[in-house]
Image 1: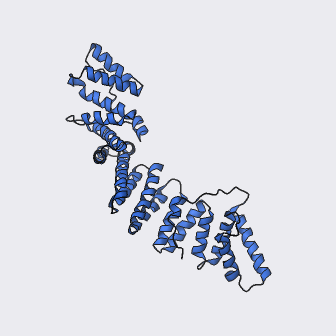
Image 2: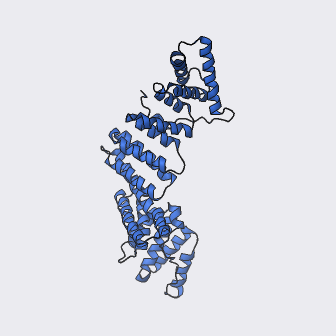
Image 3: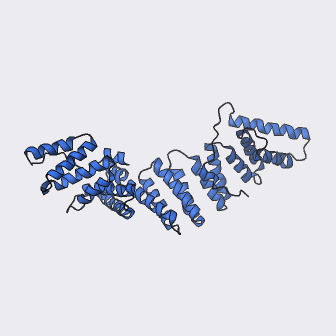
Length: 361
């Protein structure tokens, strides 16, 4: 976020103007604001402030420069010190306000000095950003810049604060609000960071209060649909939660999607379990693939399920030779589907998936 702000400050005028102070004062000012090294620039500005502290004519420009410089070099304590001075200025223009508000919100949040103030300043950013956007009319380019530089980051700050609070609260209200804020931020500015936050918040909300499963499920399903790159983990978790809600149709739909995106033995086994009664032939295919993906481990559950379903149900009553031939054919076809000539990546099941395991019956 700070990198984007440092590059795309669209409202802040370049403050290195020639201030008509004359002589030594003007030279020192121009030297300070033209210095490229942030730490050196901050020191020069502070020297200027000490030397000319009685001259109120440059108070506004000086403190805006001090705040901005301190923030860009990640000196958050000084950002707070000088930023609080800036917002005390009467009739401060909105373009300055919103920039200083986002600096203060992030600085209070990062330093943990005052989380209430961090939340408050983020709220001021949100309100002012919405006001500024209205003034842009149909200029979507400028609106999108406001979204990415100010509005989405402010919503993210609030969501993180609510999440931190919600983890320790007895009720799930704060976590629900944190999830809502993160979704709003994602709608304005899609980013991988916000995606991961929504995924984590949704899981946290469900774990905190399983009765909130609809909110968690809706968030991750929306995330899966809106994400630029289809994420198999999102689809898998949505499927698991649909299964929790006894909606087997949607559960199978999303777990199948997850498997199609990233073939893994445990997911193929899960699909076989879900389908063994209603679509046993399809279940056999999934168990066979799971067996092969699990390095053809004959001690695996997939292999045991496969043999049981084939020999005790689908091929029951047939001659032994025909049963064995059919079993070999199942594995042959599974190998063809999986394309064994290419290396199959084996991954550990994500923590969120393993912890969300449910009874498939």
